[in-house]
Length: 171
Image (cartoon, rainbow, N blue to C red; front, side):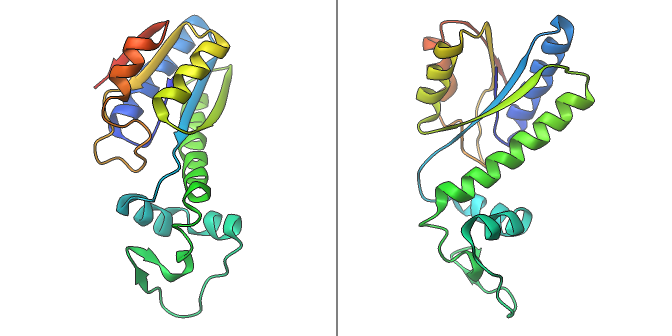
């Protein structure tokens, strides 16, 4: 399993996981964690620029006819974003996993699947590791300033300490 967000370390973790999966003809499980918390400024910027259509569809929000006016870093069309942070994060998570799946396919990984987990990153990843008996977890070291803060501060450290399988931490 590889734990992903949109950070550089996460992308390097994906590359390593794909290389291992291809070399062993193993299943590649790509996962990301959606947390329930207010959106960060960075998430708002990504939401309004890269995933606007998908988020509007999920929230049932129609675009305004006026030029985009910002409201705390997010367009007026997303004024409900704080109430729907989880929905927006699900759209962002889908984007992360879709991109990862495309990269893995292009690199030749034959057996692939994705998982979106919801809750505390360390707790959810550890629960998934336990429930499916994975042999290896590949994760980025830290997601400082990443689009999604799926893997926060001590998450990598907690995963190494409690995973119950081999863990590769990629800087």
